[in-house]
Image (cartoon, rainbow, N blue to C red; front, side, top):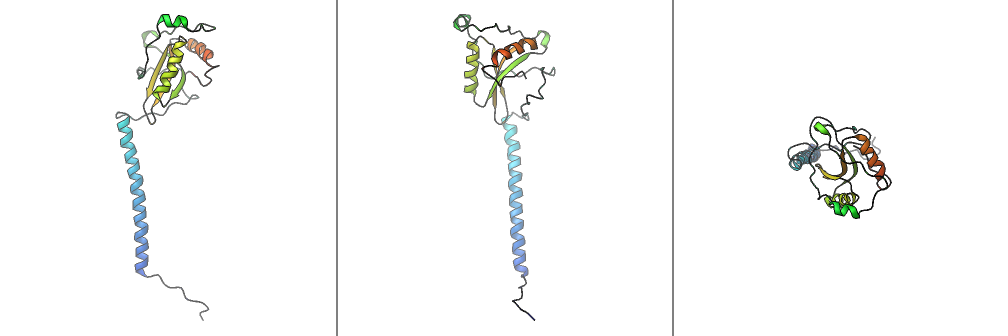
Length: 179
């Protein structure tokens, strides 16, 4: 009856060897993934000082006021303010910038964010350029992976003042916004 060779039955030894090999592969993959997740968790905890880093807010969903739940973090990277004598040599802007005034009584303060960098040197360079234009600049550090250095102009007590500065900066810094 047989018109061709009959298929050979796989021995139980071969089947158990294949099962062992597949089980070993699954254990290695699961162990590697578990180790990666655990390593990331530990690394993130060490890098953020025990707090979980928050992702930056997008421009579209960012509230226009600073929440009243607590003070904003202190700037980590700052350079000395330009003296009044060096401001006299800086080019005079077409329209004067509003004077930065912290909000009285701990109210909201408004900033214009002009950049966020992974390099503190690049952030410091931009901050210095803005200070030479007579603008008050703060460089804030946002922990996470990667660390971001946010360059902001302000603070201003009124949103209208921050909007005026934003309009002044937009021609040269189109990505500037009020967080």
